[in-house]
Amino acid sequence: MNTEVIVPPKLAHYGLLTANLDTMVEWYGILLGMTVNHSSKIPFIAHITRQGPPFSAFAFVSNDDMDHRIG
Image (cartoon, rainbow, N blue to C red; front, side):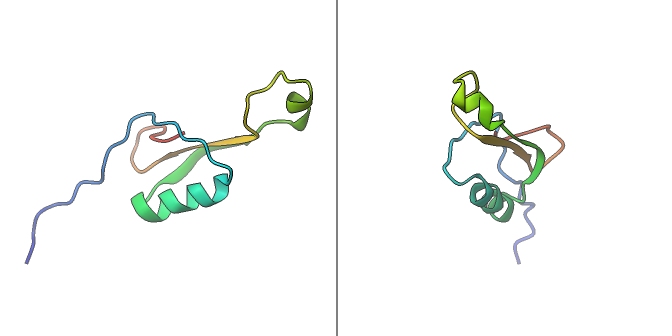
């Protein structure tokens, strides 16, 4: 029997881009037990006026007490 304690991997402020945010958040939840600490959608008007970021939504996820490990 293996009695060794398994420590989840630690990522620190790692940023990823995806075309399917919901699927990516779900995948990291299943793979590493991460949960969403904050998420937001960027208003469409920001894209029309080109004054917003080059993405339409974001989420910060973590699997410990850190505010986020992946953004």
